[in-house]
Length: 129
Ligand code: THU
Image (cartoon, rainbow, N blue to C red):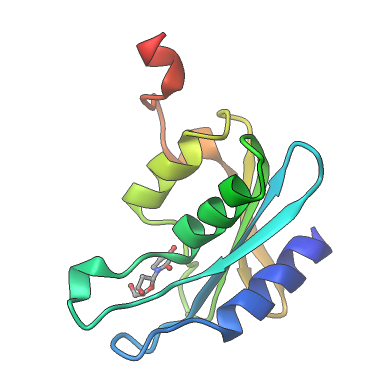
């Protein structure tokens, strides 16, 4: 997962977070092995900001991929920077329950959880088929 951490850390440096000053980076690996990064992008109209995970998913979709096999989120905090509720659902759109989500600081991964642990009994695309 070193490549995920590296991409997420580079992304984090590009975060636009002048309001919270809380920079976050994320990286997702697609089923073909491609790695896509994203950072949080805040807005003067506060609710319009987007999370790093959302930006990484947008980059993946724009690159033509539609399946996530691994996720990493990096932030600097005493507590683990886990994905927010909305981002858990956005990850779920492209990832199954067993997909690992690594929670990292810039110097390494702190913990790994599955998507099912983060979002139990989730509603997903299969519910609509
Ligand atoms: N944030 C993320 O980008 N990802 C997370 O997993 C948690 C929170 C961002 C949103 C906002 O720009 C800042 O961190 C503070 O909440």
